[in-house]
Length: 455
Image (tube, rainbow, N blue to C red; front, side, top):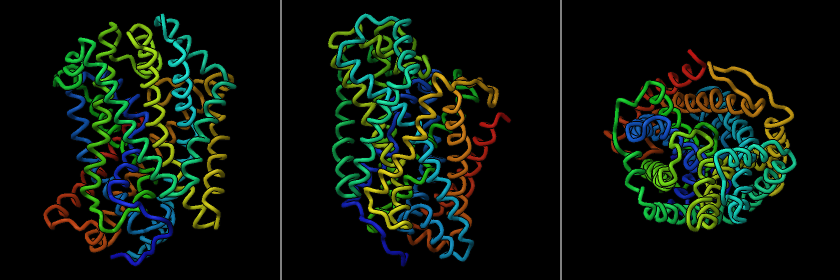
């Protein structure tokens, strides 16, 4: 058993940790990205490969990241330094925690701007502004929002404050209370949307699209997309899961907890698809509409259907809730580090980090209008300036390298006895996981990283 002492509060129960970590994992990627990449890559065959990738890369690395957090019992930077020294190696491994913390700050800077779109669309839906939208007017509506820096800054500010208020209140009073309300509410809202989808007459068409397996549509590019999404959807490599793991009770099973998180995260993504695709098909819209599926295609559907104002509002509230639970986890690692290393009050630390991410977010706000510029990366044309730069820096470089380093440290550097002690698995179960972590997950991540660079 580790001799480290907890620097902060702990979750009141394993279930609360599952809710919190699921909240970190469930975000815009589940409800916004998963449906459209499924649509673009042929449906059921893509889902099957995605689930396989979750098992081969997502679950092994998530178990490792939780393990490191719980054994270190501190913020990611301090945990990695402590665990490296405990295993008799260089304290420079603290850089692994530092890269994760920095990635969280950078991601939050643009994530809150995107989440602000969803906040804006809650108001749009509730006001009945989706009525009579066409493809052209729906695209123009989103374009007008993106081209208005003042409006984007307003929604970015509102979402940033929402996030800071929760983190400032601490583990039990802030994070726990938020996830205990937001996660059940998120599932209820999703089920309401699925319930409506059942009434459209196109539900089975949507289900067939999601689950009918057609490997002829599965390209090598689609497999890489599934691999990448399996890694990113679980919030790995950015310190969030490690920070949450540091608050995890010692008696809780890391393996069982990780499987519960992966199942809930995947369930949200699949339910989102089951809610969205019947609406798309019922209105004769395009399932593979790309990122515009949520902010252009669905508003058209809500504008045409009975009760569209209500269901449109429910959907975008759902999107805000999903983004909110993820955003909380993005600034928690940096907040915890300031509390430990600068002796700050938690509220001061949370508001300080949020101020930094808010200021950085203004770069993204301006990237859609006055500061927009284009460039090519890995054969793809980018048009949104620094927003694209930050997205590429974090998703293509920092997170995969962070996940790779977690696998290598836990599988090759940390003393095996410490890893076994923390996991508490049977010998057979431990050996299976350990070989996945040492060989399969790093090789897949390395391949993903190299391909993302265009090689």
